[in-house]
Image (tube, rainbow, N blue to C red; front, top):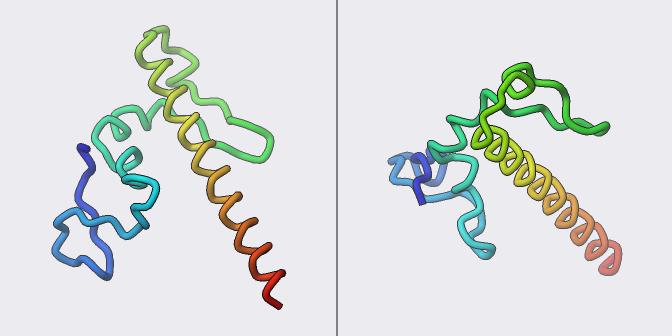
Length: 98
């Protein structure tokens, strides 16, 4: 999927095996690919109050750049929501077993 090689303690050879679970597909492919690296300079930081300002993005009128940045931000929000959901499920599971 165009993902850059991943180095981790389980895979020191760098042959690209992800450290994440693959039950939901290839979880790390979207944030480790060359496309994401090219869009990152336009990325706005996500905080509790929303996205911060980025002058590169604000001054761009290229529709492709704007759509790519919006897509990247959408994926980051989805990833944060997924992580929160997984933590909530785990807390609920632990609460029932204790």
